[in-house]
Image 1 (cartoon, rainbow, N blue to C red):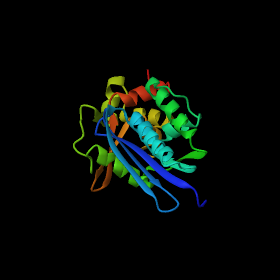
Image 2: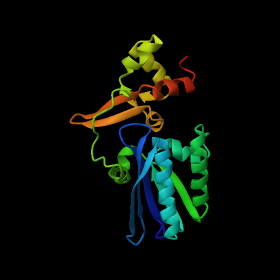
Image 3: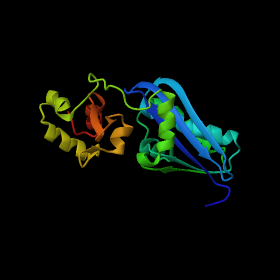
Image 4: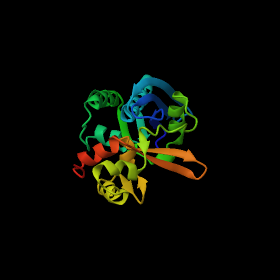
Length: 216
């Protein structure tokens, strides 16, 4: 590891609904033991907006600290691939946020973004949840979140048939939501004594399948 390299982690959270109250979490660690924590409530919006805002907050702190060499880690595949120019930005509201991120990155001589699994981003995740007052998941709004079978009914499909389309759209793998599904706000993981309970968004999941041209 380079003796001058800083490392940063970012994460955005929404409080039980998407859109909802947003929080950003960030952590920067310097080579000499420096530690900068970020935990802020930024009002209502979507989870992807929260992820972008968290990345902006981390980069802004790095610029203020005059960091010269930085690696930033996040679990939002969508944000990282959009900023790196690998994915198109379909949501208009994210375009100016992406431009701001790139402008901040341009102020740091050496900077890169790297994706990590959610389970490796625990400190930033805890800071983002702290910002919106979430220490654990509260009651799920069942008017928004439900199971696949219920979502499939209005389309005349069984839960199994609907699930196969989700697999083709890479929204689910081995029965679990993929990172893409989480980034799009289609899935909600609620911690319980057995691990996680999965809920699916009544509107955003069908919208994601339509976007993938797998649902009429």
